[in-house]
Length: 376
Ligand SMILES: *Cc1c(COP(=O)(O)O)cnc(C)c1O
Image 1 (cartoon, helix red, strand yellow):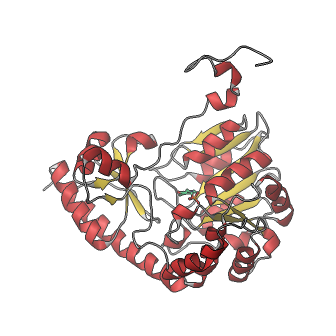
Image 2 (cartoon, protein in one colour):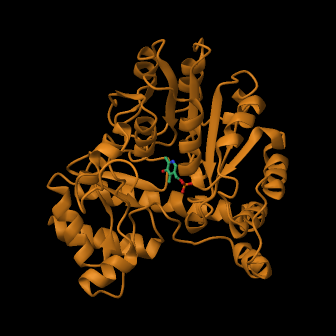
């Protein structure tokens, strides 16, 4: 040690760490299946906690992986050329407008690092995706939370909170963790007359599950709104969460800046090749959408019969008001092998967030929930 005193083991490092980091909380993810198996000695576990796809991924992904194995020793293409080309063809946008990263999580960090200056503000829903907040805090930005209206984003309130300090507004649609969505009219009203220096991140992680009739095509607004940032992912409907790959569609000039911040090898070679193949199997996505829609109807019917309020969902999960202590319900469900997300971890006490699974799992889950809640 040349400079400063040696930190003691355990404590004492606080003065070495950036203040922004001290204000952050660690992300609490859905409990992994293996952890529950270890802790409770169970073998049959159903995870309905992290909005993963119960149908897995398209069979094409497996083929792509086997084919790619020969290239295990190579660096991936840092330009993501093939994937950008495939996305460009599917979306009818130029490759230069597409950014690719290690999941939308990674892109949220890239956007924050690129745009947020100390003291600037982001606006997000009070109950929305927590990564928006953590990455803003990391950059020394201030987080402004807009109260929800019946657990739905209130776009009028969010817009009213824009000040000359506002840099980013996060519209999560459908919104995690509530599942709620907004339609064309609400979006257009929001975008109307927005100040020029305000960027709008439209996080469409659950796009493929949307069923509402007045859904909009976010890409239609890109040419008229240069400050629109559309985020999508392969983690949810594409069933590829383990790969860590997501993408964004943005203004070309902005893409140039964001690409300076993305780690050059953020997306590994397997993820890139698998994503290109997965895009070709839109029949799989259609099946995923259909299964989820059926599961959602079943959830609604069962929850209504049990007298449990829920938020109408446009995603692959449902936020349920269990009318009692959520953490106990979470633990009881887990003892029986079902992992859900307790509201306690989502700042929504009294609720659980449950991923819609296969019909068989959905039925087993609802029977168990009845039993745990004594709603019989
Ligand atoms: C799951 C999720 C993401 C993250 O997706 P990754 O691509 O796996 O990082 C982003 N936004 C929302 C709202 C999500 O629910």
